Length: 78
Image 1 (cartoon, rainbow, N blue to C red):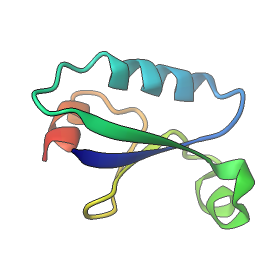
Image 2: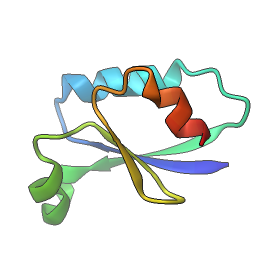
Image 3: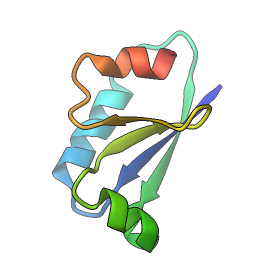
């Protein structure tokens, strides 16, 4: 099972859309999704405040920035 981190912040409509897109994927292998509230970590807030949502793949720290578009399935199955 692959781990992913979704960088989010409270009251973020785009983050809600990103979560809906992730839940809508039909995957052969399940993924483990962790939510990371960037407002709880100053270093993340400084770097990602204007970029969330961002999906981070744990195995290689690759990032997929919003909008995910057609790249989402390829990103989570790579």
